[in-house]
Image (cartoon, rainbow, N blue to C red):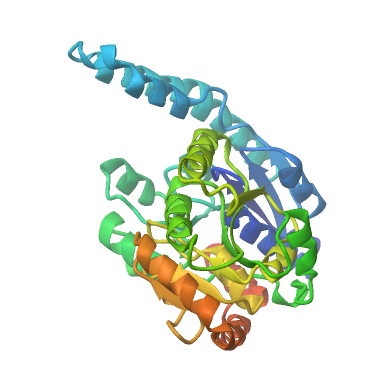
Length: 407
């Protein structure tokens, strides 16, 4: 195949922080057929983990935030005097929205347009929801090139959201649950949606990673029963629910350790502080600990006795679910969204009633009291993951989609 036929794919990542979405994108970029596709990656954030992408693709950092609109809106919401003056709150919110357009959206859009034109991009793949990627979709319209939007969450049905969903040429949904939400709430035709499960390079997972290294680093005794909630510290990920379950189990499981694994996005620093205060208020300091971001997740999974996903809103799919299953670990997840789609209760993991700390605590205690159940369900989970979440299958399906959209 000649050099001229290689298509340039622009990937735009505008997520809240370094989490499952960009990790899955990196897996995809690594496995693209370079004889057919050349990846160009743009991220709205920077830092060590983002900069590593330059080793795998042509990477560009374009800041998508010059003023913190979320912080401004939070401060306005807390200012009681504004609410006492009719119409003032609406006026200030409109001013913040216009400032967002002028100082965040417009500069990002112009630099992205220039990058796409200069790199002779043939297709744009937005790695997040259409609304936060409207700049990328508008660039696609201006340059008259196809756009694909990777949807990873539920939709709220707002008029602005439905407008954003009218822009892409095609959608990749990470689960059937997400696809149904798009059809119901955003009126996306079924023929514009391809359900493609996220892919993990299963063969590269270190199944024999030393879990004792992780336990030593975080002062988890060899005989402790370690339960870990893995995910960015974002309110809907369920860390507060996890702490409620820790309180319920504190006198039931000797040597219990409840570990919160994951980094904190800039927008959620106050949320982490709230969690730490809850731990103090409920006297859980000896049970609960934070690890922050961990680069080698295999040591985490093998260092935990049980892995938990506790999202209070339906998780679209969840990298934690895929990775934990692939590692053959005992897994507990909420009975909604992607977790319920991926896991079979009592076969590949345990499901609990969403938002119910008692139900979560009961399943953790069940795993504690039935070690043979942990072993059996962990092995079943690995077998299922190997058959379902291959990065090769994921990449081939996405490349076939590109072929169908490109001339």
